Every structure is written in structure tokens, then in C-alpha cells.
Image (cartoon, rainbow, N blue to C red; front, side, top):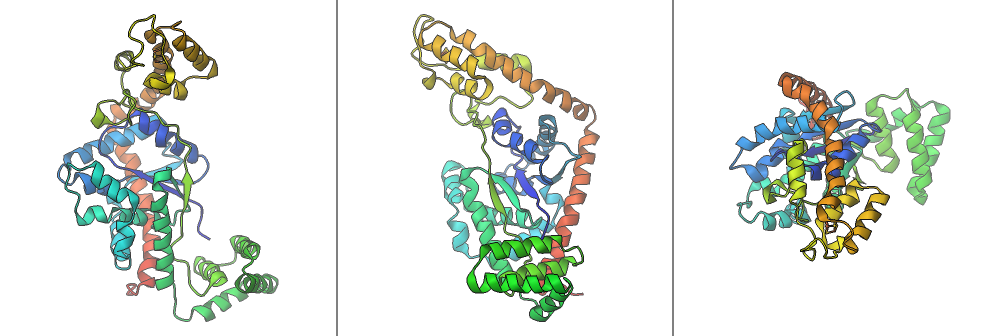
Length: 400
Ligand code: SF4
């Protein structure tokens, strides 16, 4: 089977803030140590909502990559690239669009949500309707096994799986597949070939999932097979189709949610964000002027942390002893709000220090960032081209 791989992207529509860090980036940093990861700047996706303001995209792209590097994305472990530098994404998007029913796109829940949330923009465009399909192409082109998502994005992954399944069903039927698959079985060697056939029968006749898993594990180990034969044998196990595109799995992220300074979702457009590389004085000022429980008008008034956005910051940044100190001190008016905010200020500044350090060389010499992205574009493109060769061939566009 294809190697395990993670793909994820972000839209370059503004600078990154601590909400992005806690909601997604921290998770990327963890994943890059576990599996090969491809992280991309989704500039075409940004155009689906910012088609009338493209200037922000290029500037934000470079800032965003510096933010990723500052946060700890390691270019020696992960592939960092720009979506539009790998035009094969667009080709796959186009080809997938031929066989994707319109209803699948219209029923993606975030489509309607976004149209309502961004009511000030005209999103009745062809590009916007198609963005979940472009997302599918972004993932399927790398035959990614996992995509990190929050709960609200799970329907997108479900749709990607349906699209991959439909593609394999429509185009995975190779001329002479049965004969080629049987030839490939022989290449396993007589013992393994016998076992393969037994497991295949057990799965196809009795639906035994363990037999399928055992056969797949055996194919994973079979070094002697070419990539093409391996895919045939995977497809042959389950039916009579070659697997060209891989159905990805949603990898649910247990992201800690950091709200904005006013308790709403952190967003630059709400003016309630702390930038990833915000300077110390500004962080201090923003936290010091953050709203608190409105009941605490005077220092002697008792408060309730559950009504205070500062408490939500403590839940992300403070350990249990500090949290207990906050709850007790707030409810008894034993501490003042400025006092309560200090550990949060200290923790944010501590968290950001290594980010500033990591960002500095890239700010001093932006060509380093360009070079990292150029390498990433090239590496991603090689993988995308491999998949596109198979896709074109399967769709009768091989012209060899
Ligand atoms: S003491 Fe802390 S938790 Fe309580 S209202 Fe003030 S800032 Fe909020």
C-alpha cells in the first residue's frame, strides 16, 4: 500500500495568532515527529473568498511560513510548499470535477455556514462552490492516509473518501485486470500466493475483516512486488478494481481552544487577537486591558471565573495550582484582576520567546524562507506528478 502520509494546509489571509498556534500548529509540530507531513499554503483557497483582494495573499504567504517555522515546524522533517506552485492540484481538481455530483458539494455543511458568515462577500461563485473538491484534490494527490481536522471538518473528509471511492470505481478498471492480478499473485511465490488466495476468498465470501487485514499486511511485507502489482493486488482483494486514489482518514485533533481577548473566537478581524510573534510590551498591554467578569467593578467585589475570558486563558496556560489560586482568589475577592492576569502574561511571553528566536534568522535573511519553500515545492511536485501519471492513465489521458 502507499506509505502513511499527512497533508494539511492553511489559508494565507492574514498573520497567524495564538489561536492558530493552539488550535492547529501545535498539533502539526507533534505530527511531524510521527509521520511524513506535507504542509501547504492554501493560496488558491484564499482566492475563493478573497478574489477581490489578492494583494493580501502573497504578503501573508511569506509571513505565514515564517510563523510556521517560528512555531517549530521543522523543514528537515516536513515538506512546506505553496499550493499554486504545484499546478497538478488544479489538474486533479478539474478531472475530479467531471464525475463529482453537484449535490455532494452543496451539502457540505461549511459551505452554507461560510456563505452566511461572510454575508458581506459575494460567494455565489463557481470557485467557492468547488472549494471542498479542491481540498479533496489537495489531499488525494498525495495519497495521504491522514488529515488532521477538527470535528466541523469531518464531513469534508467523508466527502474526500467518497470521491476517492467513486474515482477508483469508475476508473480503476484496468484492461485485462483479472489476468494481470493473477500474474501478480504468482509473483508472491507459491506459499504466499496460496495464502493470498485463501484470505481473498475468506474476505469475499464470508466478509472476514481479519482475513482482509492479514492479506494487506502480507502485501505490505512483499518486497518483490512492483508498485503497480501491489496496487492491483490490494484492489483484487476487495473486488476487481485497482486502487488509484487512497481514501484518507480524519485525524481528530484534540486542540485546546484559545479564545480571543474578548472571549469570542480569536480572529484578527474582531480585533481580539494576539499575533504569534507579537512583542512583549504589546502582549502585556493587551492582557492588562482584557475585559474580566463585569461583576468585579471594584477590587473588593467577588467574581466568577466562568464569566471571565482571562480564566479561559488560564485554562490553556496555567497549571493546576495557579488555576486553584485564581478560582479561590476571584470568588473571595482575595486577588485583583491585574494580579490574576500576570501569570498569563508571563506564560505567553515565555511561550513566544523561542518563537522570536527561531524567526530571527528568517527575518534577517528572507532568502532562507524562499529556499525552504522552493525545496518543498519541488518535493511535493514530484509526489503529485507520480499520482497524476496514474490518474491520467486511468482516465484514458496517458497518450504514451
Ligand atoms: S480575578 Fe481573574 S478570573 Fe476573576 S474576574 Fe479577575 S481576571 Fe477574571
